[in-house]
Length: 139
Image 1 (cartoon, rainbow, N blue to C red):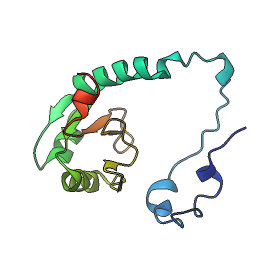
Image 2 (cartoon, rainbow, N blue to C red):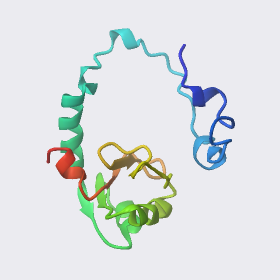
Image 3 (tube, rainbow, N blue to C red):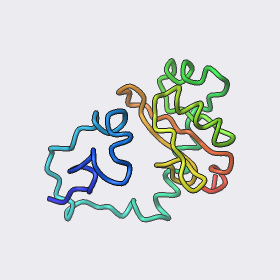
Image 4 (cartoon, rainbow, N blue to C red):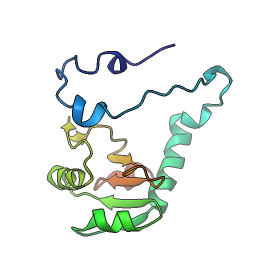
């Protein structure tokens, strides 16, 4: 079994456990066996992934305004919330209680400026979308 370095010693490392209790401790390590050698992972190749992810983000229902959390919580569909800059992203991230840190000019865990998460155990996805993200995704 292969594990990422953070799964073994989450309270140690370069951040000295700075975000462990808040963001990492609640994560449950998967205990289901998956035979990855028999799985078709071709959908993860960048061209296919970019197309599918772009369509998913573009088809999510746009939510605007300072009450985005309430609106997103009351909708039973995937939602897309646009952020304009780092300060705007951090404000929205705090509302949802997600990791708000940036590195090298982009939010951590972002792909093409998009951070995707599920809120409070919901099956719905929430996409936080940067000012240039849709163009980068080709939509």
